[in-house]
Image (tube, rainbow, N blue to C red; front, side, top):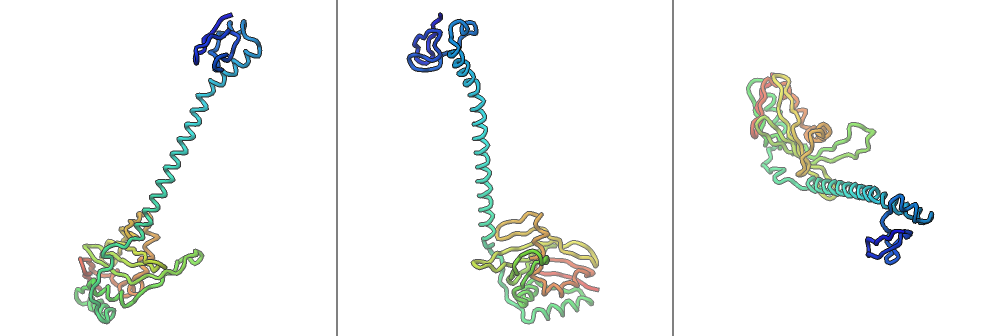
Length: 256
């Protein structure tokens, strides 16, 4: 009968032992022939069980490590998403500097604008940025309702809009009246088209300091255009102008 030394404590054990008599550790497996000669049936079963348990340990450990890794990754993704949403909300609530530039209003601005538009049939005319903003100030806040009545969206009150003109571009800015603070927003349009078919194409938009993705512009544009809707009927004739140029601070045009 062979003797075996325990790999844990070094104690010598007879071949019939499965566990070390000194420390209780499982002894190293015996050779197949040796096991058949020296181990009792019960000891042989215990030995095979211990060998099988050791063989399964790496697989169980690997599976557990994978599960822990997936949970950690999911936790990081959720944390990153939460942070991103929080940052977006903060940026959207911030007020852009110089959002509504102040300028001296023009009395009876809308009547003045109509006379200028009428005179454009005979000579080139100019609508200044100051005059258009004065017209928007005269119209005051605007109420906007969702075009689809089945959608439960409350009536929104849009504060007085302001426009800013650049080379070939026009930016409309306004704000939504909220219980605690206004939500500022703006959208920029570029002039496209030709004689009789001019149009303003949405280019970019923002809420507060948060830039909106281009995919949201079709949803956002109707709200922005609602800010100038009362005065838009007077400006609609510009779409069919013979010539139309947007310059910094003014619109130059001629009508038929």
